[in-house]
Length: 302
Image (cartoon, rainbow, N blue to C red; front, side, top):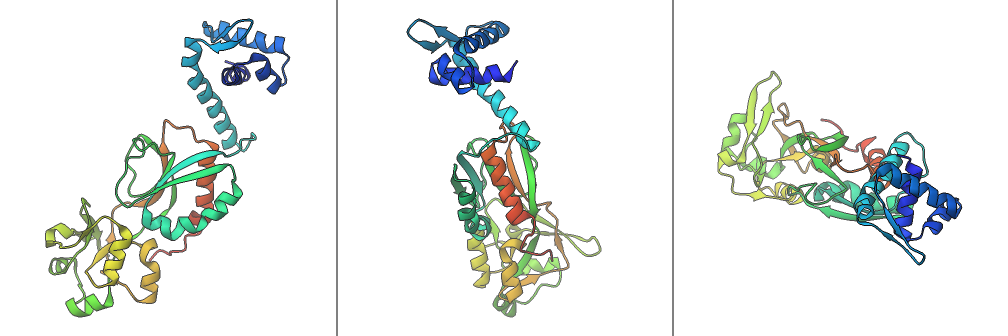
């Protein structure tokens, strides 16, 4: 099907005026009518009902309209992917992310993004608890976990190294574990419903960090609260390096078992449903985050 005719149909359906739709595309009324008639012949359905007084959508036209819009969006996305077209980012972007990461790295950048893209409105949903991207009707989300859902597409924003840490005060009082087996004698903090984390030693030794096996007395569902509790001496926790790298550099937190790597395949992923067109508003926000955060992460691998 000719996308120019599809575009003409969408405009005519929105304005309920074939002549006005044609003029917007630089077509004479007779040419616009002829193109729509040809499209209807190709589809084998009357999309618009015409009378001397008005134009209205037929039942078939109403059913076809969302698919027509999708075709145009797909065309625009394809041209944008090739660096072509004049698609302007506009509309409301629903974005979900970890509240801890967003507070540290995304929120400070939002004024710059909004200034660069005045046609975009941001609707941010920030939480460290799990969320369903599709059921939540999000356009885009940041997930800091291993990506296993085959219904999602993604781009990697950055690595997400996890480390064990505690406050100097806690370690002075309870001792510093030298082997993972000694974790059983410590207060371990973890997220609610979090799975045990595998630890890999310098020579490939396998161990595990599992607060549930130590009778953990402190379970949280917010990353910032966990870091604050760790700083206050509540115990040993596992954190993303992006969350605690400044505290480690300053000495207010100390890495525990630094020779053991957390083996959980985590990374920071920008994800969106496969069924969604990568619209201009999503593309520009992704590119902005990749440029401002992913290109040169301020936290360094350790």
